[in-house]
Image (cartoon, rainbow, N blue to C red; front, side, top):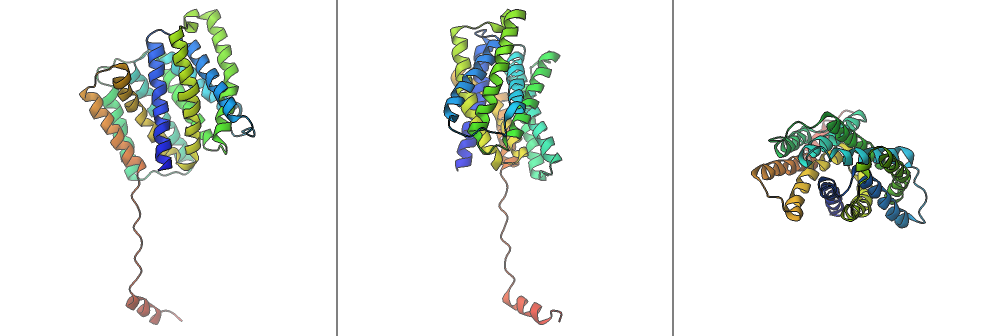
Length: 298
């Protein structure tokens, strides 16, 4: 039950990031560079406070910080140019496929039922995002795929963390200078990317301190308890959760496409994650045991 609750809270944080980014970037309340910088710096500040007194996490380091930055920066930039549905269709399957590929490379062998669940969930994503959506600009599509691969790499490294809070804090703190450098470059080369309003700043701070900082800490805490394949499949639920959040929080209207696609995603996740219990092997009858002993080799 603890694992289920933590998984649910983590996925809600991921969906919250999509909603916060959509609200800030889609409305022009923040530019991509300013949103990314505030998101990473606020997450770093909160996690530094939370992790004080803990030993340094050697599992994170610069590779995790770079992966975190190369997820957050392309994610923000891509959402300026493509719709939320198209972005989800590009981001989360790329995460799932990258984690699956690494899992298979390291010896994980999904069962046929898991493969079926993955197929159903991907079909649900297609139903949710493809109809009526025009082809995204190639640069934006590439940026979202890079973000997905970077997040998959960050998640895989997180599986090794012995202290999830310290590891997440280390990655965020190290990524903060990269975010500041990106913001400085935006001021010089593309001022519109550094645009920021008070509403955009608030959304970025909530995204960094709560949805990202706390959400990623929870994510790292459960990664050692699940397989790479399961971790990848679970993230396919985020577009459905984000769509529901859009209805409840942003006033978006539900559609048949949303209900059918979201239902298929959740059904596919259930098939891929929930494994049937193995039946106990019945003890052989006493007579058969005696007969076997009587006819055994000497």
